[in-house]
Image (tube, rainbow, N blue to C red; front, side, top):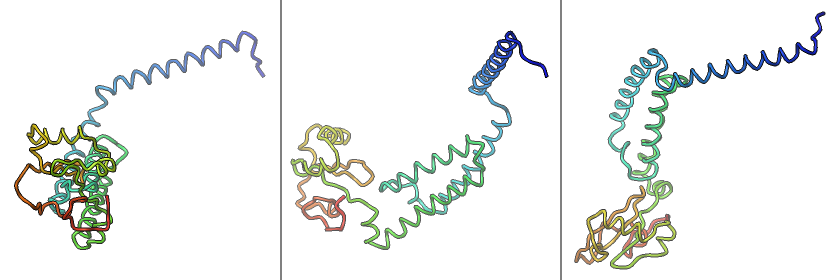
Amino acid sequence: MTQLTPYSQPIFIGFAFMLRYAQITQHTYQRKHRMFFSSWEDILRVVIVGTLAYIALIFLLRISGKRTLSKMNAFDFIVTVALGSTLATVLLSEEVALLEGVTAFGMLIFLQFSITWLQVRSERFQDLIKAEPSLLYYQGRYIDSTMKHQRVTREEIHAAMRDSGMSTEEGASAVILETDGSFTVIRHTDAEEFTTLEYVHNYPGAVQTDTNN
């Protein structure tokens, strides 16, 4: 059996180091190369899979109705973002097959369809999953308790007024934080009653529901 001399061990260590350095250099080169171009096969896959996935998504949205892509509450926003994220994953990830992506599309759309179907048929279910819009400003008065609960500042309300083309607070009768997180500004009017605010939390004439969100 051959024994290593004291001089052989540094030689083997140096050889192993050089081999490892070569592997790291090759890996770095491949990463830099893939940064701009991988292969024509990958590009062809993106074109074919992307086109088919896009067609499948359009078809599923068409049969599910316009309500699927509306942003009336947080659940609608989640579905919209999830659909976009799923499409991007199908396009760029080779580990996700086209059929798996289409299945994910169908599942998300079906869940959103089921929730909205139950929501319009059951007030109890609607109160369970959907928050109420909140009144933040009304007839020249800021509702500080609601603003603190919803984590909204006066500067953000002013921004919403400016976005609606108002230069003074007196130009607004009410500012509402909607269930999707957007602001609605109602311009000043001489009307004594605002029937569109009857389901808004904190409005004096609001319809009472089980939720205080």
